[in-house]
Image (cartoon, rainbow, N blue to C red):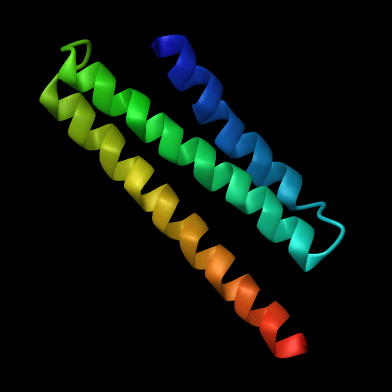
Amino acid sequence: MSKQVYRSGTSVGANIRESRNAQSTSDFINKLNIALKEADETQFWIELLFRTQFINESEYKSINTDIDEIISILTASIKTNKKKINKQN
């Protein structure tokens, strides 16, 4: 499970980094959507680690708060950029 957290967690950052060089707003949104999916997957693995007692409640709450914040930021960024596309059309 820890390998899954590592894989999905680092993928979030990699996709956000890749979005900086997006070729269009649509490409930017696509990369952020991938990062969002990976963040959601990471949250799943963290929940599983907690439920199987690999991490304690305090660790879980701290990590989960961070993941919730990342998910919120990504969601807001995606919505904002979708509005930009809709205004252009």
